[in-house]
Image (cartoon, rainbow, N blue to C red; front, top):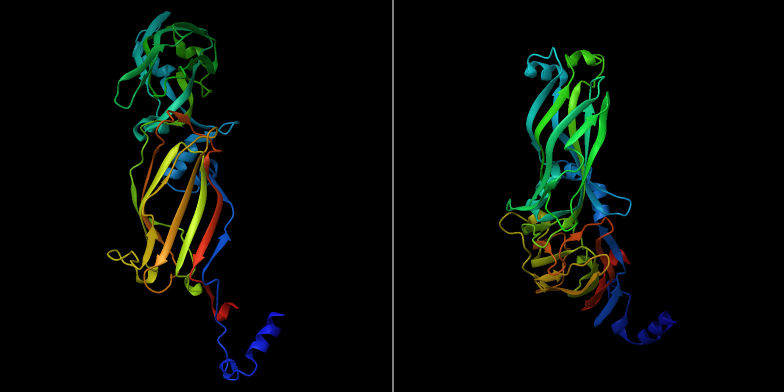
Length: 385
């Protein structure tokens, strides 16, 4: 029907003479048109962690230490020695071992290392901290040990936030040929979010039989008196968390709108954020095409983007934060070209007022809905019809 009407309109008017050919370029919606983009995402912590294992360096380190529990919470694990000595080395230190004796190992201490030790410096917190202490006895005899055990937590400024004894370790008998037997469990109070800075066994002493090395199996790998810890905690965002602002190119941007000769485009986005992190994007600029971009001139000054500052509020799984954003792109002269890169200053910090919030793999940034409003018409090029 549309073709018939066009033919009637062309009859008798030489302005519509098609004998000399016709341009197949068509411009539609010259006022404006709103196009729904739909839902995108989510970008969750879980999806990020699942891909970190392939990233060399810090990615491998994070994926090794930080895991998910059954409920999706991010937990950090670490294990190491508190005290370890070979029975032959012990005999050498003790001297005369021809009769039963008490050997004093003295003051032994360690700190929780790995990623846990660095969290405080990043403004991250450790909650629900638990430590299981295990011990090994290589002898065919039961061995009694004594000590003054304690655990201490310190804040990033090295002030003590918690200190207390370790129950069940003041005096204890290790059964013969015990290997990594759990002898104590530490649970730090839930209101303490500073990482354990030290596990101490003060005045550690062992009551040993004569010639202890003769009470071992030399073919065995279990030749050590050994105390170790297995540590777990939930990773949380504290009120002081803030990453150093990143000012530079944003990779992965590809908006091929140049062929459509769009003068102006407005994008409306509804974001839902369940991360307890506020994101601020400042000085948002479009970059020149890669082939003409250099270190001194990177920004395409002909493309105007407003607003230059975008703020995304942080929330939680229980109380998601919703942010409505409107982003406008306009060509100061001509039409918008292909946009292959953006540059911005991005700041990530804890959302004020939320306190300490544990991190979950289910938390993330969701685009609930998005639409693009195009002004000035869409020109469909000849090669795309």
